[in-house]
Amino acid sequence: MGAGREPLQTMAYFCLTVLQMHGGRAGAAARFGISQGVLATVARLSTEAGDVATARKASPQLRALTAEEQGWLEAAVKAMIRRAGEVAAAPSAPRSQLTMSDLPAL
Image 1 (cartoon, rainbow, N blue to C red):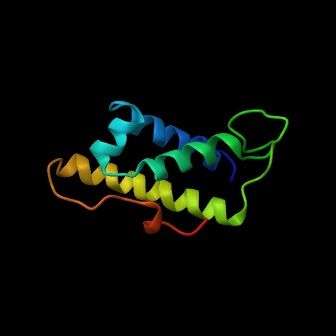
Image 2 (image 1 turned 90 degrees about the vertical axis):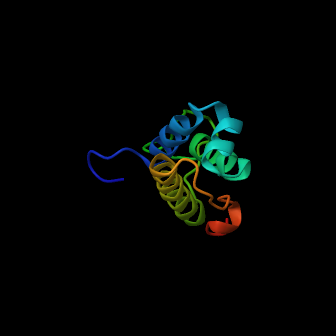
């Protein structure tokens, strides 16, 4: 995290929340063609992981994201933002569902 930048977990959860404004997690999955597994993993990593400087929520079990988790979360957020833009540009265009297999391994 650079000076003046939001932690990855906070930014990821914000993006998830914006998508979920369209009918909750199930509505976001349907509208944006993103699997529930991807959305649930974004929610879990952005809520349960982080150190004192990056955690979105305080917890006695704070732990930093692993390198794999950070890479996955970065890729997932980029894919979610791209998908939101695609849907905004062409809401009824056919597109494949974004799934865990489209993202780096965890």
